[in-house]
Amino acid sequence: MNRVRLSFALILITIFVAGCTPSPKVPPRTAIPAQDSIVALLRAAEESPPIRAAELRVEAARRLVDQGRHEDAVAALDQVDTRSLPPSLAFEVSRLRASSSLERQDGSRALQYLDWAQLPPSMDPAQAVELAELRADAYEQQDDPLSALRELIISSQLEIDHSTRLYLHERIWRELTQLNPNLLDSAVRDQRNGYHEQGWFELAQTMASRRDHTGQMEALEQWQILWQGHPAAIEPPQLLTGMQPSPSMALLPTPAQHGGRIGLLLPFSGQLSQAATNISEGFITAMQTQGTGFPQPHLLMLDSAQISTPEQLFAVAQQQQLNLIIGPLDRSFVNAIAQQPFHPVPVLALNQADPGPSMPYQLDLSSEQEAIEVAERAFRDGHRSILIITPSAAWGDRLERTFTRHFESLGGRVAGSLRADTSANLSGQISSLVATDPRQQSSIALRIRQGEKIEPEERRRQDVDAILLAASPQDARQIQPMLAYHYAGDIPIYATSHLYDGQPDRTRDTDLNNIQFTDLPWRIREPSPTHQAMRAARTSLYDDLGKLYALGADAYTLFPYLQQLASTPGSYIEGETGRLSLDQQNRIVRTLPWAIFRNGIPQPLDY
Image (cartoon, rainbow, N blue to C red; front, side):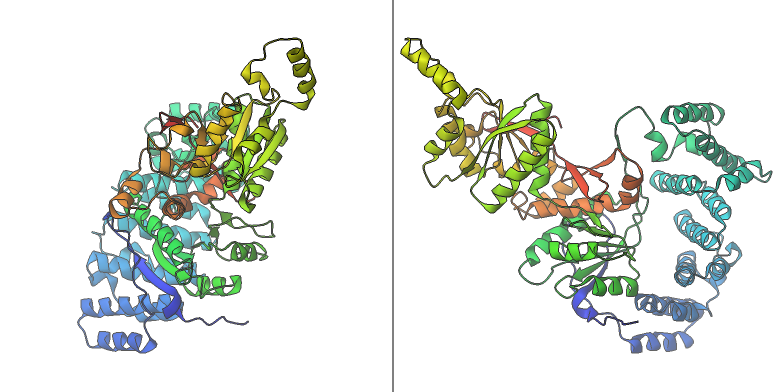
């Protein structure tokens, strides 16, 4: 097997962000410690008193884990007696031992290290929960899901904060729904069950017995009557709270899956380094402002200028024991990942992928999604025949194709289109677009000869009821008055976010009045805590590069919920770049809010 060798000093930054200080700075790059540093730590441990020796061995074990040497990490800690250590240090020793054993698929050994008899009785509840989760992982490796569930149920009864308890309830429910029906029936009949265990098992059995939505609703109501005081009734898993006759449901924040090791793969060097900086700052700021009370991820910055192929990327992911990769940004790299037969680590790419055998999750800011949103909004408002105006540029051609394809797929008709060139005779271009329908020209000419008065609005075509527009603010300020000049000022206009530059200006934008447009919540909604923190530290938040702060923030918001979005049709997350759901191609669909210009100022509309 070939191993890809890379200079980790060039491509890795390891950070752990704690607290909520909103100072979104990308940390400096640090090299992975050399082997002789580990040897020195272990030698120093041999000559140190027990507590200091344990601290040195823990540091050596951490460095060995970073190098993927899990067996050596366990060996470095084998001489440590956790019963004589302070609780926090005993926790770290046990955690490192167990997680390293689990990485080697040795669940039996992990359980030996997690024996409660070897741990101080005064351990912090949050730490006890983390070790219980490791015990559950170990039981699952041994194909004993019921023991894993009992560990999780017991740990959920500890004196822990609300968000951690919700997280455990989510995991318990996820594990229960995956149980073999025969095993679940056996668990329900087990006479050793306590109150909490019996309630969870009966809930799962009740829900499994009914497959239709209505039947499950009835079964849930019956269970709630019998188990009113059960934790699952008081703080139910999100999948149960979402069971209502609604076509979609928002996933509420829980700490599920927030921890782990994440690689942020971006072009930190080269021409796109500013884009990488903005995305990473958005991610880190969201971590600081949203992550209070959640297990924080261990974040590694990976430079896509140094890691340029899927083979290199997945080799780094295995060496660094990553649980998730966020990135890359380059579409050709994303396409290469999609062409891989499988992904050893989940990938949340930040660009769209062409169809392939193994599609990554994709979160992107492409204008095509906006064009679809605009077409749907116009059709939903009752318009069936439209005109399209786009720039005389390659990106305008793409949007025109998307407008046309989607509006026609809904059952609408495109009556005409214009590739507007505002540097040329714009009046002539608009006149050609909105001129009287050729089918009515002879009728109007006859009426004129007969001396009949023709109203001004009749001089433009009557076979359209809306205009779909993609234009910069500068171009739109010319196009809107020109439409009015050619008697088409009464036709409703629906526009993409290109219309607005993010800076309200009543005097400048009066020419945009009555245009409806879609845009990121980041730019037209009340600022979130993440947005407020960014605004306090940065000025350019709303231009094209500024939107990347929102993209980075949503990458953090999304990653804990990817599996839940995939398994729960109709579910969504409220993000900075839109209301986020997942389609069958693993692409994040962004449903955007709307606004309309009134007196030169954007006013929010409903979705």
